[in-house]
Amino acid sequence: MRDPREERSTIMRTFDVRATYTLSKRVSVLSDDYEIDALEDGSASVNTDKTRWEDAYTEDHYTVCELLEKLSEILKEKLHEIPYNSSKAIELRRMLSDCYGWSVDEYSYEEA
Image (cartoon, rainbow, N blue to C red; front, side, top):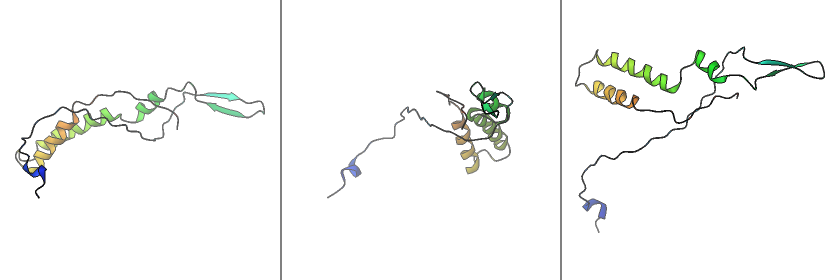
């Protein structure tokens, strides 16, 4: 018996899809945006309740969208160095195309 899928004669079609990824990364940041709280026993505690973590992160690190922009710049430079129809150029153009069109739906920065 033949597989019914083998008899299907459909053509390739283009479909619009939405790709959604949830990414996270744990990094160290430097910040002087905190308070020192004195405790009853005479010791002190660092209070980061009002720390602006986004500012601390973006001071020394790239966001994912910024990384995609940097990658696209590098890919454009590399494409000028290799033959247009080479397999490497085809791969780089595909990568470059995938760098565009991303949007940030939501983001957060919090103390880990």
